[in-house]
Image 1 (tube, rainbow, N blue to C red):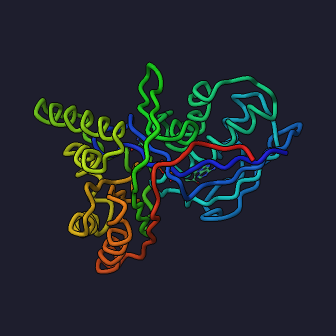
Image 2 (cartoon, protein in one colour):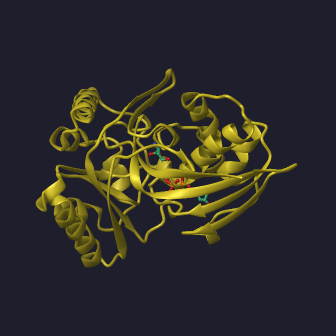
Length: 291
Ligand SMILES: Nc1ncnc2c1ncn2[C@@H]1O[C@H](COP(=O)(O)OP(=O)(O)OP(=O)(O)O)[C@@H](O)[C@H]1O
Ligand SMILES: N[C@@H](CCO)C(=O)O
């Protein structure tokens, strides 16, 4: 039996839709894998009542099949599903890392990214890599069809999770099909600024680079209180705020000294909007670890 911890992740970071992602130091899923003749899945923990145990419907089932590695898989969810914090990807990443080790498949961490992404295709219809890449590799990742680039980074973040459910499938339906050249220019500038910020562990550049006028405004309408929470976080010292992944989680970058003030401001703003929420005072962290 092997135990793997895989972290929550935040995809997009505003300007890097379907490309950028970061691993969060917490929360995380813990997945135990044990060799078996056929795959069975047992789910406990946060939101487990909404997660199918059928291997054809759970992200880890697709991973076990792709690695030809049938197993008893026990998932202890630390990350609520439909959160925007890469819940489905964390389980898939943990299963990929654990089953690769258990069956001695010899895949590198980078080779495991598209395998874990097969799990994402099961739940959202698309095999995007932007959550599974940081869940496996840690740090900040740039996932393109040509491959994944990874850089270690260390910046404080607040991930605020309202008690609203937004499925990735639904949030993808509101993404605009076209964008203007002006928006393209703005997006390239923001994405480059953010990437430089990750190399320098610079919350100012990262926050500025999280600006996005294409996907985020369309999705903000799905999250009650989003504009108020964003404004409150910025007033409390956050350097940049955006939707985490497909939402409803909201991600704020900040300096160390401002982290708890930003977290409280976001919670208060959700409360004023009549939405219950919890805030993780977290930071960019490591990828899946075997215990
Ligand atoms: N192992 C798993 N963990 C979590 N959700 C799973 C798992 N397997 C299947 N699912 C299903 O995936 C859906 C949640 O995935 P979804 O991509 O919508 O949320 P998320 O992973 O939290 O968000 P995001 O990808 O935006 O960060 C739910 O319908 C859930 O039942
Ligand atoms: N890039 C994806 C992440 C969610 O899985 C999206 O925003 O739809």
